[in-house]
Amino acid sequence: MPDKKKGFRLQTELVKIDREQMSHHIMKRAGEILQNGGLVAFPTETVYGLGADALNEEAAQKIYAAKGRPSDNPLIVHIADMEALGRITESIPKEAKALAEAFWPGPLTMIFRKKECVPSGTTGGLSTVAVRMPSDEIARELIRQGGGYIAAPSANVSGRPSPTTAQHVYEDMKGRIPMILDGGPVRIGLESTIVDLTEGHPVILRPGYITLSMIRSITGEAEVDRGLIADNSTVRPKAPGMKYRHYAPRAELWIVEGPMDRVVSYINEKCSAFPGTGIICTEETREYYPDGVVKSIGSRKDERSIAGHLFAVLREFDGEHVERIYSESFDTQGLGQAIMNRLLKAAGHQKIDVSEK
Picture (tube, rainbow, N blue to C red):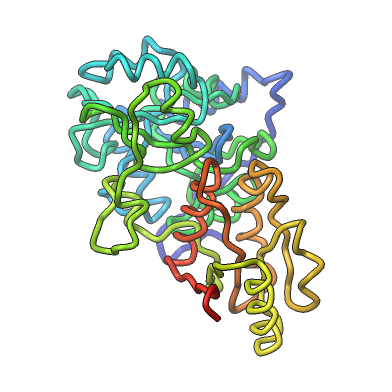
């Protein structure tokens, strides 16, 4: 049932879309909802997005209300072609053009100085705008039908794991939005990499599928925001959204770090002490956990499989009604940096180091 306490009473339509034979009628109707100031959830290659007309202040505010999202957390503007970029940005640095040539359409968001036509409600009050060109065919057709500019964060209640299927969206957004386009499971499963291009060389504000080494291969100089990698909690991330807890399951989550034999031993001890404990492991270690609610997130030989299953596994634990979850940690190089970033935020940065135990 819709959450009447928060005033959401919309009838939510869940509509299946075939990428091979996309219904023009359905896409046109979804576009009309956006052009009339409404919200539509839709698939991208990263996660499902909750879309609104990016140039409509009131529409952007509806996103914050539906998600329960802090209003200082900017929205990413999604476009379908390069011509659209110049209409909303003051300038396009040469590094941005090179990155777009290499990674657009795809899971890369770039930050630019914005033009006045982009309302402050979309940018969280900032003078900059975050822009992405998704590769998903449904997303790009919706952008075209919706007027060319769609503001879209992940289509989940703020703080919950990002949705990688339309059913995940329905669980969170039923009664809050009029339409969900169901394009099946997403391809990647982690949100886009965010790169700031407003202060000289590129700075990664949120790690994702496009890694630091991939960006450096195009631009030469690039770095990761110190707030993402510093152990010192007083060093704040530059991206406003990175200061909030995200992706959290309902149970308490801890990340266990150290030699794998000690990690396995520690988690098994906790399972003995607290029956029904949740465990996030990999295919390589699954057999070493005889007790608990064990879920493999993929193989360490394939980081893409881990990235693709992370949010779905976190949501699955909600259905298991566990009270605590322990997760193995992952290498922080390459795509592993994005995986650990999401896990740590889901855990509220609760880590247990068993190296010395």
